[in-house]
Image (cartoon, rainbow, N blue to C red; front, side):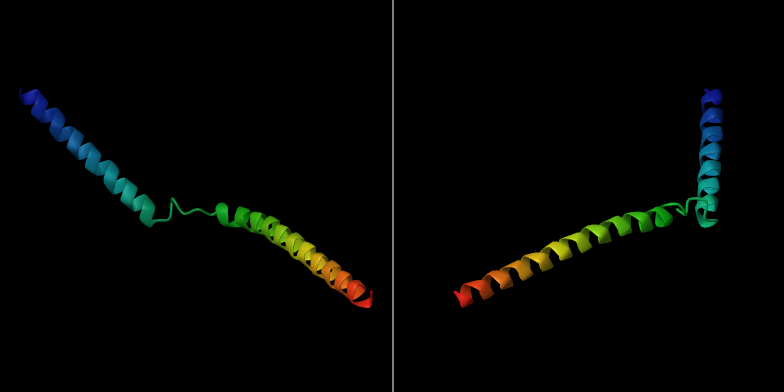
Length: 75
């Protein structure tokens, strides 16, 4: 029975040790994400390209509608 108490005590100390190591790693910036912001910039460019394409299509549509209205007004 004393062996169980010994094993539980040791496992608690090991768990606390790992927890302390984890907290120290988080505070020192070990888990900071340095890679995603540089990649996000590339994906933002693709999004802005899509938005600019949509904007160009909308401008073309407006120009076409205005030219159709001018032609209808002349007729």
